[in-house]
Image 1 (cartoon, helix red, strand yellow):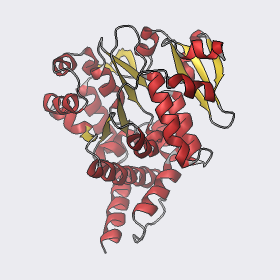
Image 2 (image 1 turned 180 degrees about the vertical axis):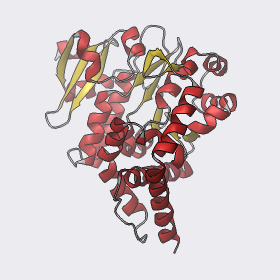
Image 3 (image 1 turned 90 degrees about the horizontal axis):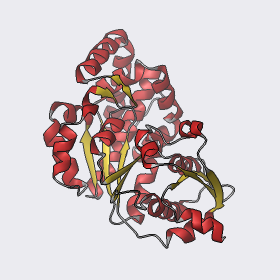
Image 4 (image 1 turned 60 degrees about the vertical axis):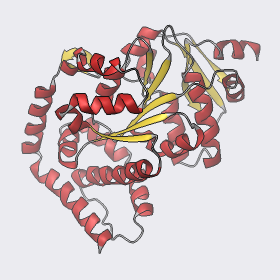
Length: 327
């Protein structure tokens, strides 16, 4: 136990993987630079064979109570809508950013399949947040960019973490479908989340005559609609969650970033730093590749032309679903 506690209280050991069934947490030793470089804090960061150890979850909960209860900022999103870019823009010498920590995805997966009781989500989120927020180097605050499959955790998080702030990032349906359909991997991600989103939509709209999606475009559109319903409900009932349209951020970057900076209670100069960031012209998931706004628009136009039929099917599905609810 003393050895476990010693590891848990060292900020350079990141809570990396959560095993709810076995009641244990994997810690990995990752430097500030390794965390900054990582677009995904998942198996891909293990290539360098970082030092690590499994510790009992009970020890992790006890250690978290010895940590200061610092507020955490969060980005939740619908997937493939600029969340990595936004997290890059908000990174600073004083803000520690964790992109898609695997332990959060583990918790969300356990919740979806019923392996984690709903009343246990709060304690898990509280302990992980406290451990993630431990100051690393000169960083004084922490931003966590979640995986899109973690959106079911937003409600429990807000119920548990009273001082945290959340950005809910999405984009309009047509460019969203164009973005997904041009990438088989993106479609695969959306289809993997389709069942949970379908159940969410049926619960939210019990009287609507919803037709099961019959194509990739319809399934992706259904997922988009479900997340719109989820995000709208959250933002309507809790001012700690701010909805942000990624397309609007590209069109009006300063105004949008200022709203985000104020909401997250970041230093005013964060906006200027974000506006001058080189990440606007680089691919956020792989910074060695140039990729600017014009490149994105070019790819989007090509996708809209190539997948016109599937995009229209998806838009039609959303219209029909919305009309059946209003009927």
